[in-house]
Image (cartoon, rainbow, N blue to C red; front, side):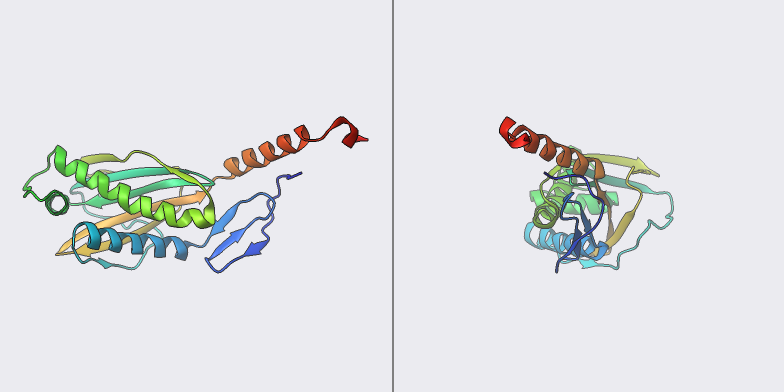
Length: 206
């Protein structure tokens, strides 16, 4: 029988601490930063043939000047929950779409917005796939793309990892909110308890 327990028991080489009974994994922030950086470099090099420089990560978003921007957002759920965001200037969004689709774009259009949405899907999809080996199964939402002036996005997951990415004079900001979904782990534990109890025969109770 598996019961909920908040203690942490197991350490492994991935930077994760695992609760052996509740199956909650506490992932080190450096592991998230590493996976995001490697995914960004992989997607830009293989999809766009565009070299990028991944800057040092910050644990909070610095205040910036009000400007026009394009945001590509995606969420994930499972043993961990959160959101991922890519923030571009319109010029960088057009550059990405031009390289991805093989057509020159000088201004924002539905094709450009679809392209940056797909960038979020590929980058965070790679992160999800790699982290599932440690965290267990997670689900990704469909990307949402926003554009306008002075955009601000707030996540219910408070801790943010912010990673600047530079390419050909442009800067993309990758922002990641991730934390363990304790309620998901509790639901899983209760399910295991119910299954265990259902498997007990009347004779076993004596």
